[in-house]
Amino acid sequence: MDVLEWLLDSDPAARWQVMRDLLDAPAEVVEAERERVAQEGWGARLLGLQRPDGQWDGGEPEFSSPEAASWWHSLPADRRGTLFPEWTSTCWSLSLLREFGLPPRSAPAQRAVQLVAARCRWEHGGEPYFAGEVEPCINGRVVAVGSYFGEEVGPVVERLLGEQLPDGGWNCERENGSRRGSFHTTIEVLSGLLEYERANGGPPGVREARLRGQEFLLERRMRRRLSTGEVIDPEWDLFSFPTYWHYDVLRGLDLLRSAGAAPDPRVAEAVELVRAKADPDGRWPLENAHPGRLHFPIDGGEGMPSRWNTLRALRVLRWADSA
Image (tube, rainbow, N blue to C red; front, top):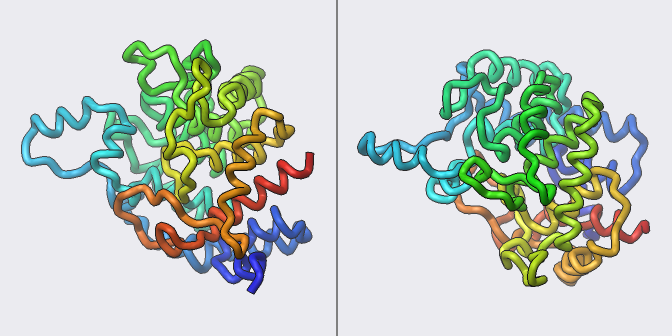
């Protein structure tokens, strides 16, 4: 079985993207396959796990004392996720449905999203889900999901525009004095702003902010310190799916591709890194499965060939080579 046949021998959530991004299938064929995401496979299964109160399982861990709970809440969101990773919460479930390409106007999607909008609140201060909370990494996710499913997230976007740092990035530690962008936070915000532009267009500053954020990644060649040229974090060279809040090189390149950016000489090193990771069969492995509880497996496991990484790597290489 060649690599494209292997990719097509999969779930509708991946198959429709293979048809669109690698095979240039007619739009009506792609959309027919995409409609199946709500009816069968991973998408339908994930929709079926939503509770009547709008939540999916997961969320905050249980604590043995108020002091422990207070300590956990004092940590930045990414640190909390490292200590108690639960990938089954409402936040990550909605994000995964978006990654699957669940048709946003379908009845199953709208039922799920309206339940969240009506009944779900953030732990931070009880804010309605699509009003966001205070951390830009979380708010970037809110904007991405809300824009995709047709929810009003304009006030969250305005907040994010006001939180962009002088270097073009974003950082959840800004409120604690940080003036340097974080790759993890920046990729979350860029994903949200791109989805918002697709759904709504302006305000005029959205595109400018997104392009400045993309430049933040490009100036650092997707992985290197601006000051020394050193690789910032070797884990960013390991590709995962789902990525959750984590940045990696493949995720960064796939965002640029999705945004329609012209391949830039500054991505050349990162592109070659992706190219070099293909196995002899032209497949890319799951290299960095972020630890935590999942609803159900969607790939073969760490170290095994990954349809999601292969799909994303092939479309990134197609984008880069088209230049």
